[in-house]
Every structure is written in C-alpha cells, then in structure tokens.
Image 1 (cartoon, rainbow, N blue to C red):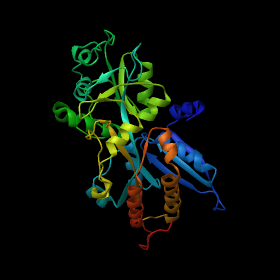
Image 2 (image 1 turned 180 degrees about the vertical axis):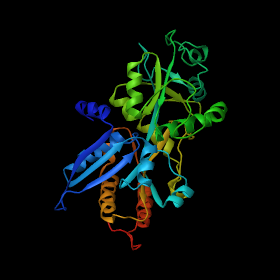
Image 3 (image 1 turned 135 degrees about the horizontal axis):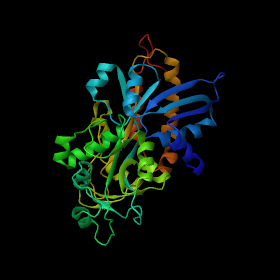
Image 4 (image 1 turned 45 degrees about the vertical axis):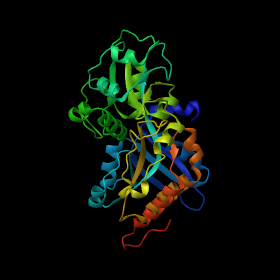
Length: 349
C-alpha cells in the first residue's frame, strides 16, 4: 500500500470505495461488515477492481463480532469474521461460510533500540505477559530467551482488543494451546476478560496504542505491523524454532490444512507443526445467507469474490497474506451453490 494509503488505513474504520461495473448500466453497491484483520487486502482488491466495475463496495471494518451481528440482522450483503462459526451454528442461522485469504497475527512492541525481529518470545512467555504475571521487560524469563539484547528496566504495558474480534479469537486460541493457565483463566473467544493492560478498538486501535506507549506490547494482523513500520517479535513455534512472520512462515503453517475435511470450512491454523511454521496463522471468512432476500446483491458480491480469487493473489502476497490454494477455491465455489434465491434456485453469478 502506498504511504498516502496507510494514513487512510489507520484513520478510517470503514471502507467505502467505488468499484466500477463494466456491464451494469447503473452503479450498484455491495455492503459488508466485520473483521479488521483482512481490511488491508480488501482495500487493495477494491482499488484494483475499481478499474473494471461500476459497483460500490461499502465495507465497515468493525470487528468480527460486529460483522456476525450485522449479517444475522440482514443489514449487509456479507459479514466477515476471522473466527469461523461452527457447523451447527451455520446450520441454525442459515449461513454459508467460506475462507477468503490467510494471514498471521503478530506480537508487536515499542521498545527503544530494539528493531523488528530483535526480540524473541515463546508462547508460554507471551501468555504469562498477557496474564500479568511478567510485568517488566528485563524479567529473567524474557532475558533468558534474549541473550545479548539490552532489555530495559521498564514496565510492560499490555495492549489488547476492546471489541469482539476474530484477531482476538486467533490470538487467544493460540494462547490456550500453549498455556493451560491461560486456557483456564481467560479462554478462547472473540472477546475475553483481559487480566491486564489497556484495550483499543480494531487492529487500528491496538496499533495506535502500541505506537504511542513506550514499553507496550500488542497483537495485530501482520499487514498492520508492516504498513506502520512496527517492531514485531520472533515466536518459538511447535518445533522449538524461532521464526519471523512472513509469507513463507504463513504458508508453512497452512501447508497441511485439510479444508476438504472441515465441515463448513471450520478450520483453525494456530500452533501447526513444521520447522518454518508461524504459530499464530489463521484464515478470514465470509458469511452469507443461504436464502437471499436480495439475490441480485448476492450475485454482485460473488462476482467480486470470484474476481479476488482469480486475480487477487499477487496483491495478497504483496501484503504478506496467503492466497487460498486452487483446490480450496474449487471447494468454495461448489459451496456457493447453496446460496439460493427465494424460490430455492441457486443464484447464477
């Protein structure tokens, strides 16, 4: 994303970009709401699609919890969530769910003199920091993993999400896998009772807090760390290796994902095996109603998603997201047949 775009990216909680429609005589508009995790790539896709279509995309980057609420209320054409809904819930609410792109959640910090990748953390150590058990940057447990690094004698300010968030779901899913105490005391959800620290709304809010507060640590989607030139920590993965967040490590974590065996595409990618795997990898999902009150809107939305799958991979890779494999895209498009008009006929897109 260009420098001028990054300002809009932090300042705005909503994406309202006009997309052009070559075949439509009158401009239409798709409405969506939800996860902030995929906001950077949705913005990029929308900008690229703009030259081809006259369709408007109004995407409210309000967090996964808000996206789920809005799609259930039928106030948007699609919801977006990083926390996949379980098959039973999809069935109960009459929804179709499909993964759009994969990426990584990364710990970011604000420590004078320590560059991106200059700090190493383990999952158990990260959990103890968020539990409020480790409160100083020069604590022995942190120093033991960072020999030779000049750690400050400074309080740790923990920054978390204040809103219902799929990024939080992925992050706490990871912490619950690596720390029995975290699982018992805080758990895994889109929103948890944080034992310590302050909270910001959206990836944008967490990033802004960490940038402002010396000695702070937070968690954001990787593109936010990149675009805002934030310092990120290396994480020890399941194999014991300290790895950096990037396209290579995200792909490694997703390499053995068995989407074909996941009903409703319900699949979590945290703490995956592999020497190069980033341990906090996850997919972001689109939610749509099986029975469409406005099938013409669903057609327009699916055309956009189809274009993103077919033509958006390079843009995704440029922002260090992992595109969905061709085999998964084929499964997704088969799932789209469940999206029907009022008469029960699959919509044609």
